[in-house]
Length: 223
Image 1 (tube, rainbow, N blue to C red):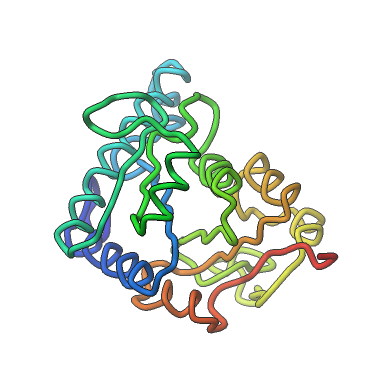
Image 2 (image 1 turned 180 degrees about the vertical axis):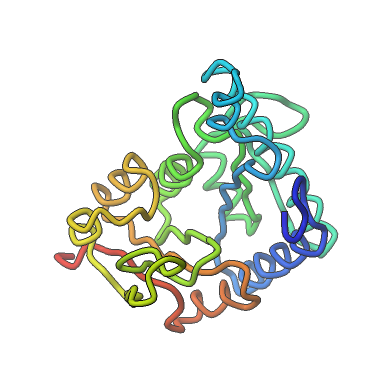
C-alpha cells in the first residue's frame, strides 16, 4: 500500500520491483510469494461476516492481482518474469508446478507465486515456506516493516533486543512471532534458513544477497 490506505502505491511497487530486478541481475534465482492484505484479508472478512473458506479464497485472488501488478512493474524494467497461480486460471497466470518453476528459474526468469497454497486456512507465510522448500531454495527472505527479530515488540518495549542471528529452537522457546507456526515448523523441519528484514529500506535485498549483516538470520545451528 505504501502511503495509501488501500490498493497499491505505484512508487512503493516500483521500489520493490527495482530491488528484485537488481538481485536477479546478479544471477540470483529469485522466487516471490506475495500477499494480498492491501486488497483483502481472509480473516478480516470472517470478522465482517464472510464464511472462512470464501474469505480465504477472496484473499487468494487478491494475491493474484498483486502478482500481476508486480509482474507488470518488473517487465517495465526489462525483467524476465513468469507468474504462477496455485489456483488454475489461465491465461491470467500459469498453473503452479514445482518442476516448471525450477525450469523457468534455471532459464533466468523471476518467478512470482500467487494464490497462496491454493487452500483455505493457510497463510501467505505457509505458502512462502512451502514454495521455498519445493524449489529447494537456499534461504527464505521475509520482507517486513521491521529490521529483524526482537526479544519483544520494539514499538512497545524500549528495552527490546534485536538479534543478529537466532536458532529455530530459541525462537520456538521464546514464542517469538516470526511467522505462523505452520510456516515456521516447515522451515525448521527442512533446515531452511530464514532472514527477517526491512523490505522498505532501499538496497536491503541486495545487501543481504551480497553478504552484509542485514536483518536477523534464523537457522539450525546444529547444521
